Image (cartoon, rainbow, N blue to C red; front, side):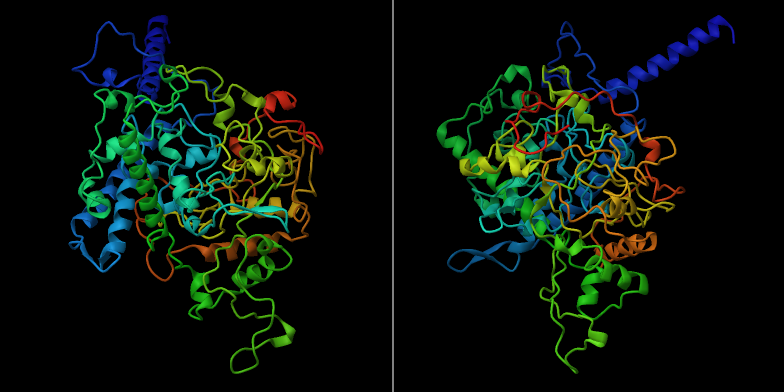
Length: 609
């Protein structure tokens, strides 16, 4: 290759890289994106990319575009449902929308869930990170394999945890401290921060987070949601349900510019209400935001999302017989594997009555169901001792972006203390609404919510498994996405304390395979759950537990809504034991997590490494 040809080739490659970066670059303010407002002398915001090579997946741009198309398609289905709704008829005292009220409120929540216009750049819906074909969790296999959290409206910003599933979250109770058990139960989200203290509904409370999260939909003010809903095509449905005067708000002339600038921008300083409303209008905007949350919760409670339509539900109704592998896995799940000590299966601990009502062969507890709709969670939290995941995008966001916002000034000095951080109103969580809870923070550091095991194995119809060799859809498991298959998840529970190594991820000794016979040290050593880690399950028994967990996937007794909308590519090959290990990277040098670095007071137990 001559010099001239090489120069041209390098130039073409450089232009392609710039084009990719610019397509992902955040917009600075609305004026930059409106040709009528554009000032040619205004400098273009520099591209914000704090990541070293290998953190962002190479197909991120095309995959984000794919998900946007899928969101648009499902939104079209929701709009058709909206337009086919029967007229709302108010009757009774108190007033009730007779006959069609339930469908109307669920449809409103569905429309909100797929509305990209809610975000400043009009490119981010709630569903962008929570698609139905994976039980409303992360829809991009390469993101699940690499950067863990999903890009927000400003695409180089990303959070620090996996996209938690919607189904059955509406059934979690308001967060409470149980004095007898000295434990917290309830709330929503990984760190239980959505307590439900005001709405008395944790799931609705959680729905108020992403629209104003700097790393997600990124609005700078909750009033922006009221402003954007006032412009939505489904505004008439909102007004039918909540009143014709709901949007009688005098929005300032600069509201649109403010709401098209992502939250955290230095122009806002510490102002969390940059949309300047009168006290009366602020109350109306707050009411709209509460209704936003309630409608989304209604959708998530609906049979479209929390369906109770799995093989296990059919089994409880005596309409399905578990296979030998599924039955063996179920016995292990509530026996040797100790899974249902946290993921409660709703069964009794006493034998069923004698025939003909029931049988108890060989003294086996066949237990009449204590709950015919078990949620497979105890609503509590635990520190499982997971290793730090060095691929987590949050660790690298240490520099100001083009808006002057720095997501994580602590870098790799940050530790995700979960519930403990929330209880002390610490960095990376929400403020706690209860000052008496602060004293319990040290004994809850590292604890994350016990999610429902239902739908943990859901994958798109065209990629029917989460497990290699597939065809499978690459998911991520646990709060930091460390496990890449259910086999790895069960193996971690089984062998965490059998193969411990004092190394960080990506640095297992020669001859050892990470996630197989090497588990790096925990990110947070404090308060580790010691009921797991050495369960003595065989390889076959691990597989049987996975087979049982797959019976918890909705869509068996009736189709699961919108599970057919995945337009991506399935993966094949490899082994579920080492699935995703090709994405492992060495953990950079980790500074000691002193209290000043982690932003927490000194801990009374073993220091966090």
